[in-house]
Image 1 (tube, rainbow, N blue to C red):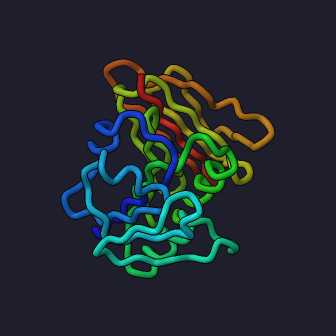
Image 2: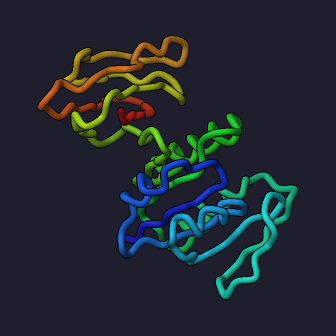
Length: 207
C-alpha cells in the first residue's frame, strides 16, 4: 500500500499520539505551515507544497511546489489531489482540524472525496480518529471512550450498530437530526457499524 501522510498547519499538542499512526513506508507531504511540525514529528518531507502565506518558503533539498495564493483548492486539498495523481492508495491526515472551523469542515470533505474514489483515509488529531463509513463494515475497539456517527452528506439508511450501549438496526440518520453522537462500545467487545445506503462520518474519541 502506497500511503501518503498529509501534514497541515493546525495545532498538534501530543506528537507521540500521531506518531503512533505512522508506518515505515509512508510518504510525508507537508503543507505550508505544516512545516512547523516537521521538527517535533522528527519525520523528513517527501514533498513540500503551499502558497506560503502562513510560513516562509523553505530552502530545503526537497521537492517543493509553490502554489498561487488565489486558487480554488486549499493547500491541503491540492496536496491530496497531487498524492492521488502520483498513485497514493491510502491517506492519513494530521494537523488538519482545529482553529479554523471552515478549514476543518473542508478537510472532512476530503474524506468524502477519497471515499468516492474508493481510497481509505483517516484524519487523526489529539483527541480522535475520523473516517467515512460506507461500503465496508467498520470495527471500533473498546479502547475508545466514545464514538459518534454523523450524517454530513445527506441521509444514510440501513444503519446497523452492534456491541454498543445504543445499538441500531436498519436505522436512518439525516443531516437535520444528528442523534448518533456519544455512543459507547460494550466493555470487552468490539462494536461494528454498517451502512446499507449513503455515508456517515465516524468519529472515535479517546478518553
